[in-house]
Amino acid sequence: MNCEHFQRRLLEELNPREPSAEVSAHAADCPSCQAWQRQLIRIERHVPLIPVPESDGKEHFLRSVLFDTGPSLRP
Image (tube, helix red, strand yellow):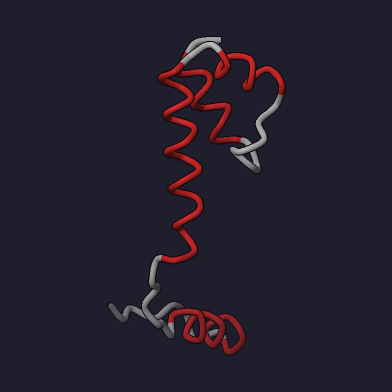
């Protein structure tokens, strides 16, 4: 497994802290991929902390589906 393959496989994992044995085996011998894995774990840990602006898009979408008004062109 090369580093690019490792990174792609790690992105597919449900939990990058506990990758499959094959993925772990590559990281065990590759300091670069170990650092990449640590960075991915750090990013995933912080994603839930990103503020999300309020939106009424879901409400408009549901209304258009339920009442067949078509999609809104609102920005």
